[in-house]
Length: 432
Image 1 (cartoon, helix red, strand yellow):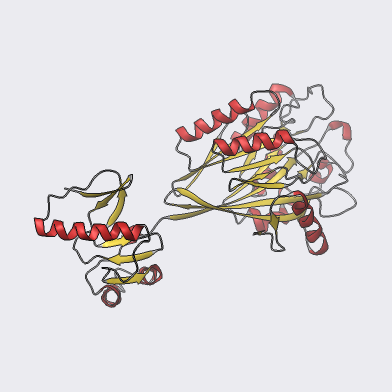
Image 2 (cartoon, rainbow, N blue to C red):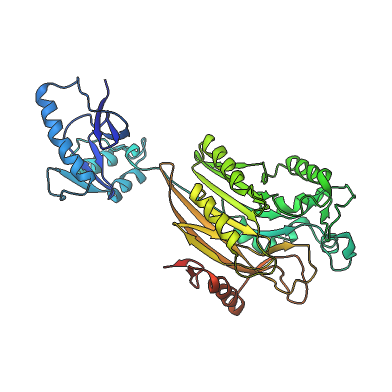
């Protein structure tokens, strides 16, 4: 029968060996056989040991409770103590066939030989590194003609041209996310509006060759060719096996059992945005997501500072359970806000943007987020910014986003920091 210890509102199961791990990553040998501490829920029961052993165990349990609350010193009843680094050293060098003798010898040195080392006592840590970039219009408006447009550059290059200067980032992360602002369709009937962006379905190869992993569709251009163009875009993404999210479509990324949910929303001023956020949160909770990320297409074009509506909606999403909020639409860089330990990136600006042959402001950046999970729980988000330009040349848009260097790097970094309530250092990392 299994044995349990009730401590506060948590239950701990004792059933293997004699190891207890406290919150400071130290491993303690209680010197009683067949005991290991594991998290469960319930009460303490024991019908396997005689009364004397029960009394001994109860005495040790009192010390364990104190250890877990950091209220005893290392020289209490603990007999053999060794650091997690020593344990890891053993496990790294342990090979069941070749190094068993050396393993047993080292185990004897550390524990006195009365404990079997097992990686079950170590927390499972998973890092998921994501890069977020801004507006990607992989096409053009037919009213622009042909010269200097995305179509002309495409005809003179290959699919991998457009994101080739970003491969040092995009090819080495877990997930690259962009805002796909346009359509993949051969349908030619435009929605009446000022700009209508379209590209043939084969242009989806640009996404694949650029190591872009997932795209957001919730913006003001995915329906430039009506519902038909939107449906064609979704079908194209499915045909090319490119994950997407936006509106009522959610995406869940999974790695090592960790699930991250993605939602994309726009039209934040129509009075329904809170309900739509709630619906997304409920969906992610029902699917046991460990983290939740929202992108919003919002704000005022060419405004370098977020407005009150953006802040209200972004903060609402975090209050409801979002772990990161990323925005776009302004076509320029906006500020980054830390709110309740989470981050709101108000606008990433343009990126690979076929919507303008020569934008006056070519500054952009990539927001890098390292999500660290321990035993399935998100314990830390490490942000980093990579200042960049939407074009590799200054006199026009060559639709080839490029990481900034030297003075340009410093200038764009200063622009990011100028309105933000947090500051990033020269290395792009957050500086407290």
